[in-house]
Length: 495
Image 1 (cartoon, rainbow, N blue to C red):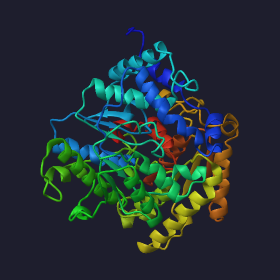
Image 2 (cartoon, helix red, strand yellow; image 1 turned 90 degrees about the vertical axis):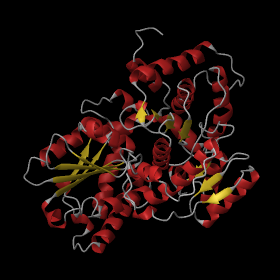
Image 3 (cartoon, one colour; image 1 turned 180 degrees about the horizontal axis):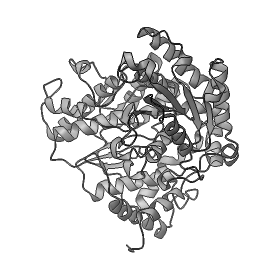
Image 4 (cartoon, rainbow, N blue to C red; image 1 turned 60 degrees about the vertical axis):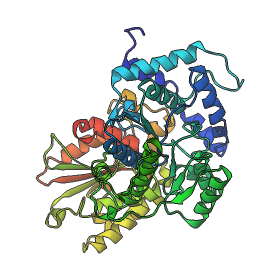
């Protein structure tokens, strides 16, 4: 490999594979049908770099379940080398590919990236005429992750599916050790107009013959589809994982009530995986190593509290929640004794700021309305007379652009925002209008529409100059949270 090829070069090459806003709109307009080509094309890409899908998958599910599973397995078997593949990243793309909990180094990222890139560039023979010579951004990183784990000879791999399941680029493992499905909801696929049954069918696509299929309690119509698909795809067993005695008494490494369900699934996935790999008989409901794994799980940007290292009195509450369900969980966490209500006496003496963005301002009314409704209910539950309008002193709606000069940090570059939207801050103005309509008494001068994350941080810094301590909730987008960690100088304490 040429010494002139750097990590910066690798990230720039990777960003060149991103879909732009127009392409993403075409996928949405197709009802997701374009995604059906992902699997045969991924198998072809794997073949062209010289590998087939030979790895171990520990789980499919949301990032927190993957993180719990990874943490448990690493503590149960500290002698193992454990790979974790997740998406998206917060600050550095290297976060998506972890070995024993740590993102791979810039040196390894660069080395393995160009090994895959060069093989695809050199081997241009395609089996399917419609297959593009280079895969898109997520497909490339998936290939790159497989290659990395194979080269590093990992003992276990925990794979998080990107979107959906059946047609997801990660679904090329012929026989994982165990598969798992977290809570079903109208999440990202809701934009495609899918029903719960259709979502369940997509998720169940990761089930494989002679492989256990695990899930949590689900709505009956979704559960029925999962059960039918497990039978059709000849899974060795289909299990709705039971509650684990003592788990609810643990203080998990990840905050939020919803994490107990994820932790329950993770424990069962880890037990299945370890038993299959070692023939160990794990008779305890919660072995000490499992407890340790659950307590020390880290997953940045999800219900995370960060004390600002450089600005005393400023506390950041970071949650990349971006669906109705996840935003409800976010508010449950923030309006609780674990976060904004951690000191009842100080509640009235602290300023609170919301920094928010989402992919479409049209969703703003429903997203923000649900958040404020939950907040009002929780404030009453905890004996607070304040209305939801009084929860925040300032609200900031900003674009996901990293810096005030309009530039992105390289790893955070996105082509998915339409240029016209960005130029006029269309989404952010729609969110501000939604906020005003939901809370007419909220002072107009305290609603900020800003072109970058750096602008938002500057507003917080000015507010923090007063004598009052300040709590800042950042939500609606993982890209927003990642950019804020970068701009606010939180990487050393948050990641």
